[in-house]
Image 1 (cartoon, helix red, strand yellow):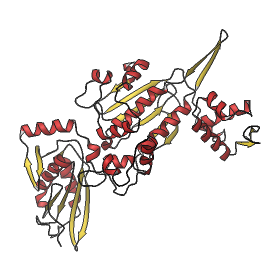
Image 2: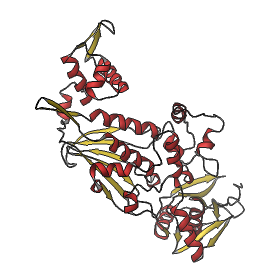
Image 3: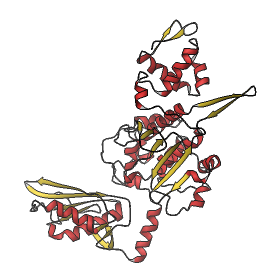
Image 4: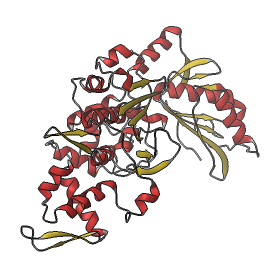
Length: 432
């Protein structure tokens, strides 16, 4: 049986006796395409001849790749049966170019592995600093749908051509397969987006873990923003016949920090951005550090060097981000440069609360009929004024109209409240 020809992304080796040459090919393909497939048990012309596989063969191949292919990648190694012959298939992907094999650097050209000269290596490193790995790394699955993304485009007043949408947005790589950016923006994925709440000022006691992932990144971002808006309480102080109000934190600063974390994180590292809520602050953490050609002072001034160029373009088209670079200076104006902890592999943004928030523990939540904090607040308003309107609830709570309606629907579903009478003359009744 013949399985094809060698290409810039596929290499054949007869046996693992050519393991060194195979690892060289993996590094070479990674440097050219960010992706490569290596078969052992297949001749150069594609004829399957089989490979003897013992108890330790796959482990030895894995260990050799870990030891001699740098930076390290996590390969997919499979024992396959093709035409009743044993074959080893190895698949790698990554964006940390340049990759080396046994201390040397190679680049794929057609089906050949060519060692890079110092000049060519420098050019590769320069290109890598401006590359967009999200569009090159293939998606882990190739059956995706994008209805939520299309709705976002239509909502933004943009035209969606069903026949060309995926190509126009850049959801496919050069092979015509979905890329990692497509996976992020698909209706369904397995990417976790968490908001985690702790009882005090450290991570000793976890109260709640909210999961907003598994869906289009745009939808996940909005859900996190809705939740954070719901907990952004207003503290009212009366004094000298005057009323003063103070929000728990600046929502605009959080929005900028959260959207930047989602747009500029290095998604191919496998660590999605997250939000941690403590009694005195919020922390937003993203993976990747600063781009190699951007220093801290340039960052603080709002100079932008996108990590994920095409993803940022999409968010710009949808109105989520602007190109003015005002987000970082806005956060600094409110909380100072100390809000940013810039590490080699992570950026952590800390937004302190304007006053310390008392976070209820898990047992207390259970004792309140499993109501969320936002639901309990709305219940309290209704108890004080059973005839309160949705418009009035929006005003006193600080929540959006849509979010108040969601809370009321949830409370009715939980049989915590009911509506008696019509919309104009009726009233709310608290049931428990």
